[in-house]
Amino acid sequence: MTIPTEQVGSLPRPAKLQQAIADYDAGKVERAALLAEQELACKDSIERMEATGSPMISDGEQRSSSFATYPLTDTLAGTGLADNLAGDGQYFAIFDDGHHRQLPRLTSGPFRYKTFASDYLAKALPYATVAMKQSVIAPSMMSLLYPLEGEIEGYSREQFYDDVCNEAEKDIRQAFAAGAVHVSIDFTEGRLANKKDPRNPWTGRNMLAFFVELNNRVIDRFSAEERAKIGIHTCPGGDMDSVHSAEVDYAELLPDMFKMNAGYFLIQLASEKDKDHVYQLIGQHSRDDANGVAQVAMIGVIDPLNPRVESVEEVSQALVRAANFIPRERLGATDDCGFSPFSVDVKPKHGSPDLARDVAFEKITNRVQGVAMASEQLGV
Ligand SMILES: [Zn+2]
Image (tube, rainbow, N blue to C red; front, side, top):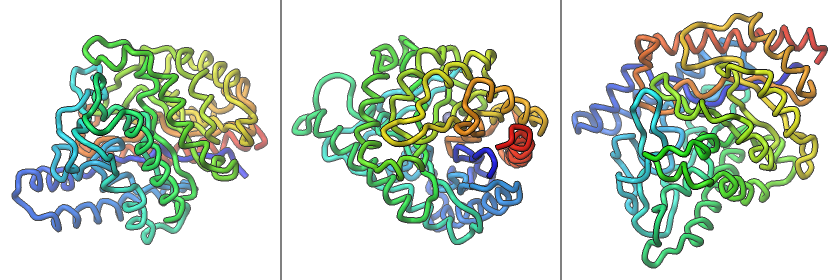
């Protein structure tokens, strides 16, 4: 037994795949050509992920448009967008480098997922020889598809939230049924909910408590045994090597976040300036009994936005330090975020998405080895 470790989910899509996405959006190639590139990228991701020695892998999300939009659209540009969605929804984030990402807008009910994460997992599993995890999007992110003001005619906000919860539950159950050992829920909007960015109105509405409650509506439908395998991922964003909410103090997020009755948490930390402050908050607010499950805190020891590769010793030292604040039986290790949550991402600080893939696998290798080193030192 060693300290548990897993990645968040995504890897940069190879340049060739990103080109295929652009060609498909432009109508230059058929869907089959795009699917063939996705297949190659998925296979390559799994083989290289397994070569890192990681005990748990993912498909690198090579088939999804993004971590948040996979249920809704085939590509980020909106090709294959579901019928009752329009492209011009809310910003879900405006990043520090000035670029933004936009969600679709719901125009009528009922709300249904077009694609479930398990659809991708089922295609990936035949390539894998070690345990696979699957990440899914949080109901709280999907809740932002409904216009912030007013009601959609014939489809109330409450009806919509009911549908969101039902679809999100199905997404998780189907991922387990397909063979996922862990399912983690991406919750990047948690930290952003305290940003109060006037350019992005929903971030000024104190929505965090609502997000936590909505997510618990889904999480609480699972048994304690199932919830031990359900995680929550928090981060200040990660796209084009930039972030959206790093300035929000974790003290404003973690007390609420740990109210979600999930069994483990994937917490960005490698890129935090004051790590002891965050370790302390985790130790203070994570629960050893969240309705029957002990909450494991997998701390970020790898920064996917920075091309510098963390050393094995660095990873180990971070975990040993964290164990001063977090009970070691509830300590784990992860990366700060997915390496490319959005399918179209040139990874500017890395030079290219292909170089960024090489760096990602080096980083994951060192995380796995650093975890082994720390496990020995801590006697876990
Ligand atoms: Zn993230």
